[in-house]
Length: 318
Image (cartoon, rainbow, N blue to C red; front, side):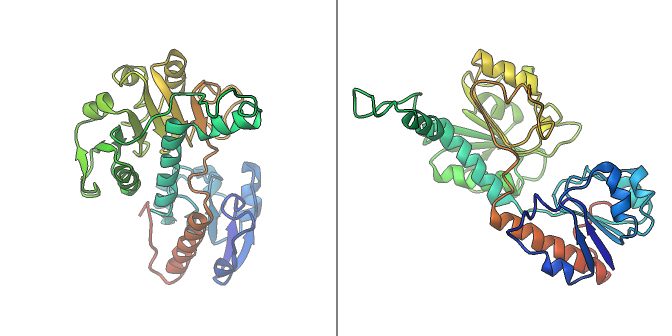
């Protein structure tokens, strides 16, 4: 059984092992694969593994031996899963592996907004404390998270994990989800989208990208938010309208924004959110903790093993 990993570097830049996956077949791992290299590299593979390398209908037609498309991600829009379903080829994703990592990053954004660790560290290193007339100073207003309202849109496993952590900080947590509320921890008030929009001091997005949520946070939505609210997006870039968020940051309607995802990754040099004051951008690293990636690798291996045993799991298209 020939197994080809098209873009393994971001998942495993060298601190993890491919040995478990290699035990299941003849494994070839490429760090990165350009679109015009896919067919040459995976044309005779039965199992094709991708993170962000696209498997389009046209590409799939040139991979006649492919029997399984395994992803190293939760999202699966990078492949034409509908066409693969028509061909009887399962697409397997990696569900619920990054919950703790994403929740941890949301709290990092909240704490940066409240305290400004990065900004104050830079000022100290620039010599401002050494030349200060007083024993302390602060570059921005500092506030406590206790008593502030965190609104969450999407109460899946990640939204629930964020809620638990925010409750531990003494925050009031309100949330909206169109789905079942069963994930909501005790202490969370489930309410309407409008209530979350209008009452949140901080708004954290944890909804999937669908036609209904695309550009959910736009100029009209932001206009209904509290003046000086903060926005956090660790869901999907297109859930927000980037220019509208940038305009709100520049006008002061939004006091700050924390984003781990953007519509285009890597972003253009003039991406409006990256260039905006008050924005904190991390390069899609919520999933990058060693433990998180190790969990991903374990699930990937189990997905392949289950397929080979005739009982595929985590299939999203059949």
